[in-house]
Amino acid sequence: MDKKRSLLNVSVSIGFKFIIIILEILVRRFLIRYIGNEVNGLNSLYLSILDFLAIAELGVGSAITYCMYKPIVDGDKQKTAALYHLFRKLYFVIGAVIVIAGCAIMPLLPYLAKDYTDANVNLYLTFGLMLSSVAVTYLFSAKTSLINAYKDNYIVNIISSLGRIVQCGLQMLVLFLTGSFLWYLGCRIISSVLQWIATEITTRYKHSDIIKIKSSVDTETKKEVTKNVKAMFMHKIGGILVNTADSIIISSFIGIVILGKYSNYTSIVIAMTSILTLCFTPLTSVVGHMFVEEGRETAQKYCGVFHTLNFVLGMVFFLGYYAVADNLVSVLFGTDLELSKAVSFVITLNYFIQFMRQGCMLFRDATGTFYNDRWKPLFEGMINIGLSVLFVCVFPEDYKVVGVITATIITNLFICHIIEPYVLYKYAFRSDMKKYYVRNYAYILIFAAILAALNFSMVTIENHWLELLANGGIAVALAVVPCIIVIFLNRDFLNIMKSVLRKIFHRHTKTAVESNPVCQHENLKNDSETDSVEDDKDSDE
Image (cartoon, rainbow, N blue to C red; front, side, top):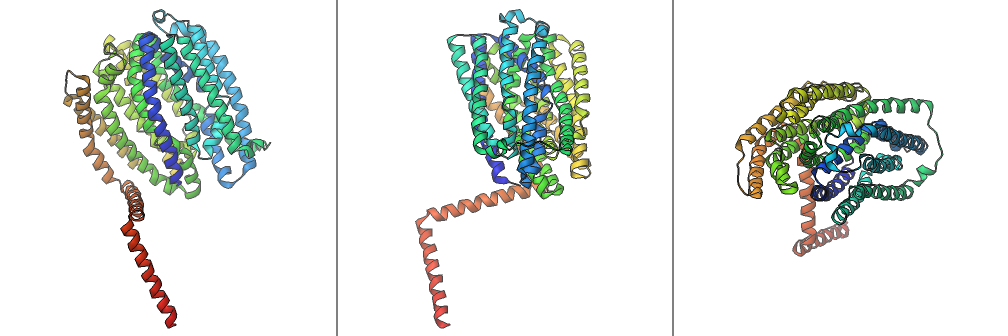
């Protein structure tokens, strides 16, 4: 496994992500302060709709990256170039489809945004601006996938992160000076154009040899690409129906005001989750190369390690989120924007359960087994929407949001967490998955039990910051013991940790010796003694 490239990809991603999270929280605060929570809810609805429209992408990005692994490893530039040019054409078509679909959905906006008149904005113009900012990204998506396929995810992260930083800076300036939602959305277009220019320059510098080759894919490769694209299309449907349906249903049945409050909570947990997933997502190409070069046994060992890492990270950070969520919303966005504790409880449980799929999905995408469970996401999405609509109608008024999220939890537990590991272990690892099931559901039960214990252990203090620190400390304390136990029960995890620590200690010792004059003198003395002994031996001979 290319550990240096993995570390570079992950560290660059996490470093930039921290900066972007802080900026996006400030942008949301400016949006609520200068325009209102109603527009904040409307903005969240637009993002959910555009996520839904992104179904037109058909999962081409993951299919591209997977298809390019083997020709890149083999040094086959002709085939790599042929795949690049094929996907470039596909992305142009996809962008056009998204624009057309977005225009078609505009007449439905008043029905999707309940109480939208409170926002006092032009629905069609504002949605059109956001749609344009997304359409621009498809002009350079093929080049982004090409860079990722060469394991240079850090380059893509630098470009996209700098673009987001510029966007956030411009949006805060515009909100402060004008208080205009139109100019706020215009900043998204500027950011997309800047990222397009930077990606074009970078790709032409690093991969001009690939871009210049005019080659077309053979019939067999087309069949493989078509198969993978169809499979990822199904996964895209499921992911969209699950992840975006909640916001659209809340907006349609409850209103954009509640959606605005709900999005404040989810923006914090999504920001945290996005940092945690950066420990996994940038490694897709690295794991893909490892699977091709080292085989399924090594991949299965690392899959178990990542699953344990899933639990440890999730236990610490999601318990911490639940402990401080209400305080953070009050401090960052306003005291009148809090939701009930029941809502934050199910949000926490839902995102932890989804996060526990990260390791499995990383190896699914890297090994190409997404084709084998292609029908699962469609079934998952339909069940989730059906349960969400049922629960939002049946649950009491104060618990309608809880009902929507509960539907997602049920869908994840009884569909995703069963089918995804089954397919990965059967088709990629060709191994029994029973141990994975036992370990996975044990992890979820442990987290749910400790989350409930945390709910009864939290303290109430008048000062928001003191309460935040106290409850955060309680959450970390409750997480420590189960994390230690789980780590010591996973031998592969321990072995890898020992190996990493051994290397760090060796480098530290070497650096200390080289930087210490006394040690350097001793080394020179030893070297001279060794040389004199060797000279004596030579003279004797």
